[in-house]
Image 1: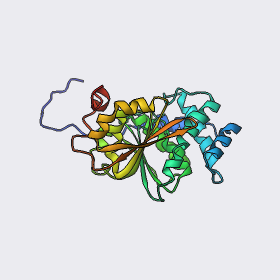
Image 2: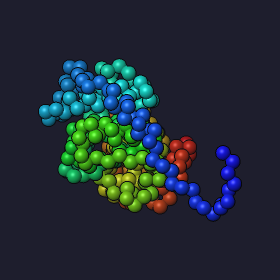
Image 3: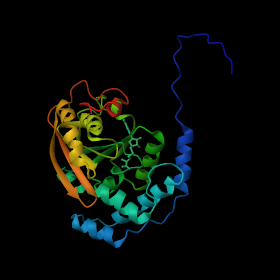
Image 4: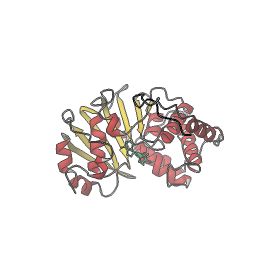
Length: 272
Ligand code: SAH
């Protein structure tokens, strides 16, 4: 519509909350299967090997989350994995490999999942560690709206969902240098995710990154980045599904980091 722009000084009105995203997700959730997926026997065996003992109802909640994730995936792009048995391993078990390093955190400790996507690894962990305070962050509103709906469904009370780019939230005093741990999977190569995740962590806290076979090669390439981020490699855990790289943040993140939107990915710190 052609309207004369009478006052160029007038600021833009704040955008209205996006009802269409809310409605889209509400519809997906309302016609999701009511029955939880049942884990294959090898899943329970592998959890037992990891020393994970479930409380009553937790496996059912994990199965309901997985059913919801796979159901939603038919309408929006959340995961490439469609086979339920594979999803138990690649989503749930892979998330739960973080239980061991998170075991050191006391009740009430705070954990941020940077780039949670459809809620992995944050949602399964929030289900089995309801004593921790999880913040699940993603830049895409459709994904965070889905994750919010999933958490509401399981009555996970102490968890928050934040829609923001990590570059921006990582500069916000509400989030910067405040979390006991940051966790992440599949958000980028080591230097990129280190720059996005470590700003959230308290000095003395850790970033726990789910990685694959190339973990040590990635670490080698990220040496300069870790140095700039005042963090160091505190260890790597071998897990049934891959590796967990543990970074420890020694001091507050220097003011220069994280850089502007897209920079950590476009030009990973330390060159390469
Ligand atoms: N962790 C999930 C999703 C991985 S896909 C899993 O393992 O399945 C990467 C996700 O990170 C996407 O959902 C994308 O929106 C989000 N992401 C990528 N860069 C980001 C940034 N700079 N800030 C916030 N979220 C980001």
